[in-house]
Image (cartoon, rainbow, N blue to C red):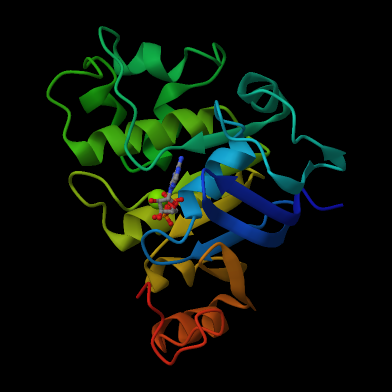
Amino acid sequence: MSVLEIKNLTYIAGEKRILDGLSLLIGASEIHALLGTNGTGKSTLAYLVMGCEGYRPTSGEIIFKGNVINDLKIHERAGLGITMAWQEPVRFEGISVRDYLTLKTKDADPSLYLEMAGLHPELCLHRMVDKALSGGERKRIELASILALNPKLAILDEPDSGIDMLSTQDIINVITAFKKNGSSVLLITHREEIALMADKASQLCRGKIVCSGSPMEVAQYYKARKCLVCDAEVCVYV
Ligand SMILES: Nc1ncnc2c1ncn2[C@@H]1O[C@H](COP(=O)(O)OP(=O)(O)O)[C@@H](O)[C@H]1O
Ligand SMILES: [Mg+2]
């Protein structure tokens, strides 16, 4: 059974059709890269799957492990094992990195997850999450906290967009850690070199999947800047 199945999902906000009949399948421990340039609807899809406040499908279905979750609230989805890393790392104040990592999972060994995210535990466990952390460090700590949750599905919205960019290899290492932990990953990115590490990939344009298949095929399509939805040699969103 697939972990996530999205069937014909449409989302209209005001006058704008942001997602337009989008379908997608993600299997167990599978990494699915979603490629698309700015403004194509990637983050909107992430918010709809996570169930963020105000984001409910206009039509279509979001199915998690066989159950339609369209109407579930964000905390109910979190309870099922869906979690998300936002495009901008979340800021917490007044707690140490150790406390932040064990907020939801008291039994987790924070050092282990920091290492998986490429940080030295002894250098950062005692630090305060809001003090003197670079953008790249905050991003890694956020990814470590998501790893510690052992999610069934992790939605990573442009994990490479931090204040300090993490290197491509850093990102690949941490996503590999999710897969090793048994999580499925919806990996949102606009960089084809990151999409190449996925098991499958899809390209989004104007709220529609325009190409789906092996990451290599989809990356070629993305790089070729051809888009059948725009019906143009050069996609207007590129
Ligand atoms: N609530 C909203 N109302 C109207 N338009 C929106 C709303 N949210 C996002 N958009 C527009 O929808 C498009 C997709 O946005 P987004 O999902 O953030 O794209 P991406 O993450 O691919 O850059 C953009 O053109 C954005 O301006
Ligand atoms: Mg976005």
